[in-house]
Image (tube, rainbow, N blue to C red):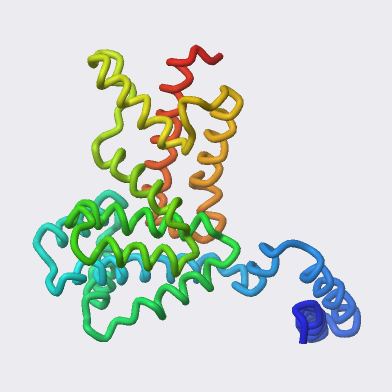
Length: 271
């Protein structure tokens, strides 16, 4: 049975149950729209538009996989525990959320934890919402960098996680580069009083944050800035199911993007 007929049949049955014959007609029309519109609409219908459920799954998966990565070399070091705690603190989780995050982190460390099943469920829930999966990977890399700097078996595992989420090696490399910049304390405002080498490094980092280059035109820079801002905008991510507890990460990334653009704009003399 094609997706088109599944959509029509489902819409008709739901409409009939809710509004009788008229509802059945409306349901069939909605089913037709299900087929004729975008893949995103199909994904949202399949996900039930339940952003709360998506957020809950995202939260649990985040800390379970974080625990799994921390245990990748057979033991969880104090530094890795501190890194996970730091992420919880940066996200400004409340007491109950920290308790749940620790429970999920602990579950991820257990021998029976299946990362494949966890990631498959997350990707299915976030279907049509690729930016959520990117945020998920950003948080994992953030914790892994602080925990062991992606050393040992952690790096290849992160690569497998990215592949399971449909994120390309190139995109993964960009996420890592930007995460390292953020971890190093990207402060474009402080570059004015620094030496030439430091100013050049800050400018290079700013281009990396926007995922563009110094050779790009002003118009291309603006386009890259808008693309990154749209991708990480907290309101957009929240509407797509990012839990409230993760909004601090989105806001930090948005601030980083704005600061990077302002530095480039200033150095180029853009109005």
